[in-house]
Length: 370
Image (cartoon, rainbow, N blue to C red; front, side, top):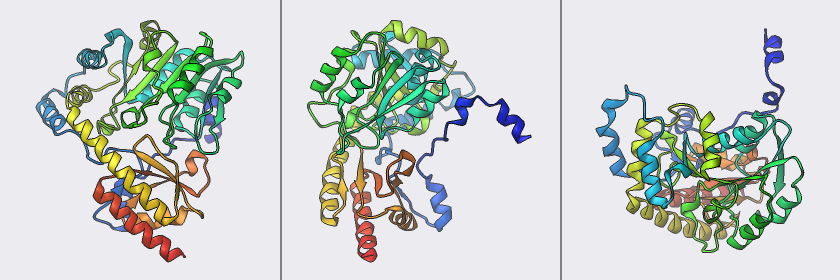
């Protein structure tokens, strides 16, 4: 029977390895019989989400037997006011990853190439292979910074899409304004740029190069998320920004009711609670400084980040360290699934208490290993 199914499956799908998310809290609880878990593996907001969102969700629970507004009219209106752009230049998705998927499905023909950074978000490769496209990975520099000249050099007659993950996951590095301007000025109109900006609210650097100022002039699909700073990861809601001519085609293949009614209400409410966003930014800033100093004392290399996570490099294989931390109730993310060596881990910046506990346990583990 298995052989028959094997023959039925599209060859592109056979090349895809399933996406591996960070370990769920309940799995680790069960495995080690723990009561409390600190999860610093999936870049979630450690403060949770706005209490105003909780109230709004409670008030709307009676409507879950009804289909949501398929067009997301009120959320689009809210985003339009917030961003000061027309509503037809916004598309909603079940997380920003769905918007990226819709863009790739809309524009990439079998055999066409999609350029994206390495290491970066694993989903890009999956989405490109899914449509029969050709993934073209461009390695970041040794310090994981972007060299956009290398991206430009990889353009061929088959290039259809270039993805910029900015800030980049898992490195936390960014594309700078000057770099981006030069790059965009050279990109021909037959190439779509996808700018994945899921973490952009966390960026501190004033020279950050968001694609937002350029999307009306270039063929750009810019994606953003409510999963990170707004803390709505479980509700799966994100959005894309682009010219209406681009988004109209993407809308043709957007699944009906792809964003739920509760997710839309939560997103509207979250957008209107910018105090929570500011608090989240401050907690991230303070946590970042504390972790930098602590890593330096422990002799752990790290890449300075513009996101809510830090890519670290241990002197030795970090597999045992990751496992030992799990036994002690702390989940961080090994980077094997990102095709980095086992020396690398990605650590989400937590609350002050979580960060201190992480460093306390890490110090003990490292001391013990010596």
